[in-house]
Length: 222
Image (cartoon, rainbow, N blue to C red; front, side, top):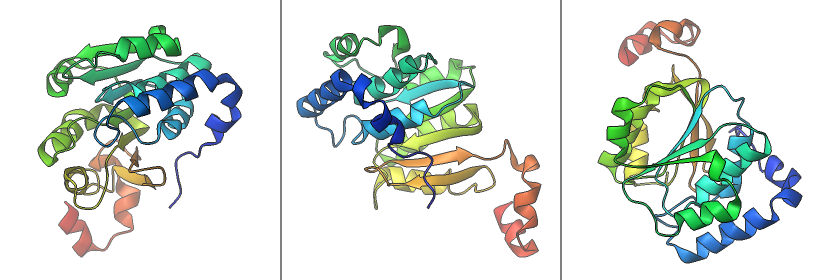
């Protein structure tokens, strides 16, 4: 499968990242990475760095700031956009980690339920990183509540996409069920991260995709 990005941007900027690289390792050692933060913040750095500044960057599930530090530092290097991060509680070390990475100006921290924030949200999103509630109901709600904000050629990335998890089931029932809108472009190439790219705005704009289907299959997906 063709990946959206590799670790090229991380490696090319490594001289600028020594402090951030050490900080990420420090955060990794202080929290339970299995349920708290990304296992591959280097990849998220590269995904953030690859964006074209066409929409917001939103993270659901902040924890201690693995992903936030990586994505916001990428935006700092390219003079891009703030990363908006949402969590139901604020990790006691989050402010310290943001300050150590010197990315205060590139972070917006919202302490609230992601469903509540979604109801008031009105900005287009270029990258949506979902790493909050890993249970089926929570993961599916985050996808459903936020996917329509993602612009064409924008991305949804999810953590903990593993066989038998609630995240995987939620993805099957939402993004994978709409291949005329969402294309999987990276399947666990870096940790348990899966990435989808929005390829069209709606079903009405998907004629080329539908033209490739038989009538029987076309009726089934409608």
